[in-house]
Image (cartoon, rainbow, N blue to C red; front, side, top):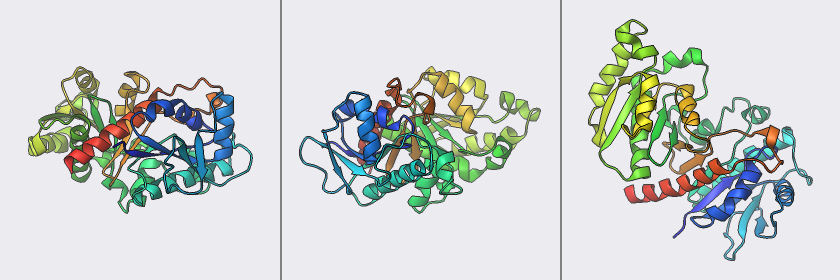
Length: 332
């Protein structure tokens, strides 16, 4: 039976609606999509893309999922006209669409969540302190933000981040047992759901150049990372290697040497992942009670509604949601 995937359309002023429209035909082959967004905007984008808008069943509720060949579209109230600028209306729409999609999952109406890009800056105007999907979804799941991990998954590699959206100056403060143990656990869990493997190879990237050069270029590797890797080697069937210099670990991981990598901070992972190919890695929030995936890019206002946005990452995110949902069912 196909899983039901809730798709929040993100910022209506961005490319979320159009990459979703471009992904639906492929998505319907593997899941039952339920869309959450602003109908006047979505309908206008359909027209601009010369796609029919009569294949959607527009409702204020996700239940019951339409039994015919139409796609259920849960309308998020807003202006009667399309919202094509990142303003207060757009902020309310994208946050409320996300909120309703999460509610649908928590009620059991949907199985997993795939989120189109939102604007953190825009949402922060109405929700001060909003820093992204990861932290919001943790809060909605009654978890602390340090209970979940931002993970990026490809069909063959899973990369987990110790920290998410924080200033670079604060990165050393995140080097501790809780965050590394949490990230290791979530990387192992995601690799198993993603690949079905039981014997895993996990690498830990160093924080400093040359992984600290024996303490010459920083003490984090000597004082914490090396003891951590030794203490956790063999945990849950995983061989732990590290700390390994970051400029080498991703080369080896892309070459197939590792199933997973633990990165010390956001850009240490995202730069090599994005250089490896657009749309190849999917953002996954590990540690939630449900599967959540997202494309690895932003709202791209500059190309919105020009019908040139590449939907590859959205299609990949939907495929990964189905893949992980299936893997989760097998591991429960």
